[in-house]
Image (cartoon, rainbow, N blue to C red):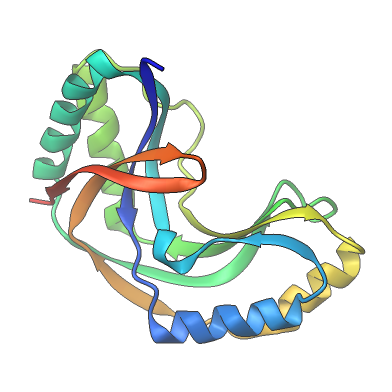
Length: 182
């Protein structure tokens, strides 16, 4: 194939507190068909590119390097649970992210992409940390109640210091290139 499935993101460290909280959540949701994200694969997507022709990757990398140079390291706070699609038919279970710096990094990436002739994603930026994907739920009302009662997620503050170009292949997220912020 002459294209690679790419996205820009930042890595998230799975702290011991997060590991304990996720183990409790998994215990509470035992019996549901959920594909849990492996903790070593935790990341936040800043911009999704999809299948990108190999010849265009150097210009994409150059734009991302400039965006990383424009940004500064920043803190982000992780915590709270939510679901995507809708509450009646949840498909993704996620942890929330709060960070002004992440929004600024996203803006830098989009600006540099435009300068390089790329069209950034049109959908609104909704930073989140995917914890699991639901294949099918037995009872969505019961599921929602169990998620709410599962545990108090410990607020986590982490510092983001680099932008990463990832390749997504067969369920794996492989760093292709990294740039320090600032």
